[in-house]
Length: 236
Figure 1 (tube, rainbow, N blue to C red):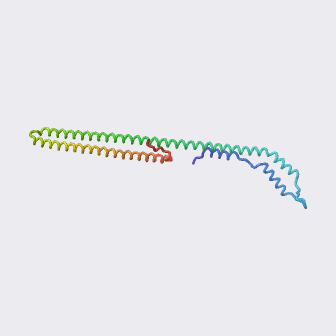
Figure 2 (tube, rainbow, N blue to C red):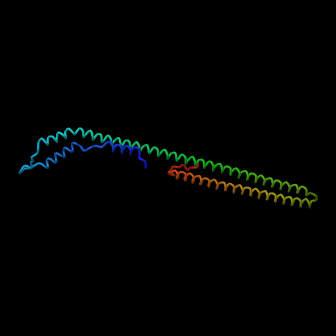
Figure 3 (cartoon, helix red, strand yellow):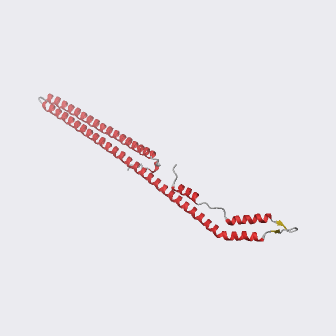
């Protein structure tokens, strides 16, 4: 994996900013060694030390103390700078990740909207065809019924000679009219059944298209690594 700006800055700081051991600490260590190696005064806890050597070490420590403080401040300042650069790099990465996630989600929503629009267009075409077929069927049934009734009336009108013939004609006419009405009723009911069946099929088609639309949106979101709960699946 490529080094981040923060990693590179940390490496540079490690290479260029190397602090040596503290002069004050070194002087104190020498004083401690001098005390431990000095000769003890018999019958007491005192020791005999070289006064000039002790004073020289104390002077070295006193002179080096400001330099050590400056070096310590520099270490703290460099550490703060490295932390600041690391924070900036982290913020940049987070912003880039958020931008990519937002772009992926926008693309998923656009694709889902296009799929939904295509499905609605196809459903509208299917609905229009079903309505046209139902209208044509009802019109044809009505025309057939009217033609049958007209033919029955014409036949009844022609049967008029004697009373018996008239009665027979009237009976026959009523029979024909009843049959025509039954036929017309049957045709209308058949047309209604066809329309209802077509609408049921259309409803199933729309539901299936909606399920495929949602599945497509989820698949796109999963390929892009977006949480599916962030994808808008409403069908308003």
